[in-house]
Amino acid sequence: MTDYAIVANQLTRKFGDFTAVDSLDLKVPKGSIYGFLGPNGCGKSTTIRMLTGLLSPTAGTVEVLGLDIPREAEALRLRIGYMTQKFSLYEDLTVRENLDFIGQIFGMTRKEQKARIEEQLSTYGLNRLARQRAGSMSGGQKQRLGLAAATMHRPSLLFLDEPTSAVDPENRRDFWEKLFDLSDQGTTILVTSHYMDEAERCHGLAIMEAGMVRADGAPETLMNSMGVNVVEVLTDQLRSLKTDLLQKPEVRSAAQLGIRLRVLIDERVAEPLAWLAAEFPHLADCEMTVARPSLEDVFVTSTGEGRE
Image (tube, rainbow, N blue to C red):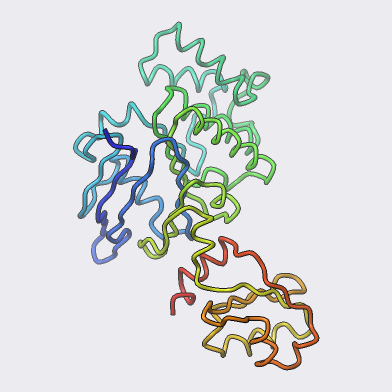
């Protein structure tokens, strides 16, 4: 009996000459929230489609909930939930009618279906919206309905493909509280996102770029093993300072945050503040502080120019 809900080895998907997912290795522990972080087009959605059996891999192997995918994809579909980025329920049906329809799809008896609908309406704050047509709901309300529908049959594994892309920060926060509740109940969740703050909430995380995993691990571990020191500089002429800093091989990245410049300096520079003052004497009297690494820093150092 494995401790992992998902195990993928050298998973690859090509479309003609284009490689959408390239030799991906993945292990997702049961009961955890695991995130895919990356820009649009990096292969996150393609990976989910292969893990659910909707798309056959060009190469590699996949085992989900102990089932060989895509060979046993039909058996898997009764045990997973899938919530897409775009609202995919029937907009001309009411909230209750949508949940009723999902219950029928999964073969629930009328008695258990009725009880489960009441439970979902209460859990996701949809009681007063039960008779409202889905098409007239706000983005946050549709999101809650989508999650209620995806978990109607109590799936062991839940796939969420950028589920919070069209909702406000408050609804995003409430949505994540529901995900933690599900995780505590034993549901494994795989979620794709391009929001750094959401990625930091995950138990485990893979940073993807151009179909490849560039970094993999717990967010805190990734932030503590970046190989850089982070320094924030408060001074004038930040744009010209950034240009000058990026000429130095010791500087991995520099980005302006309001009136400060956030500088990522190779960890081989033992005293980053002293090094900056020595290399740029006019900074000696400026405010410079060592800052905590962020996932955005990890992303920058793992992808694109950060790897050059």
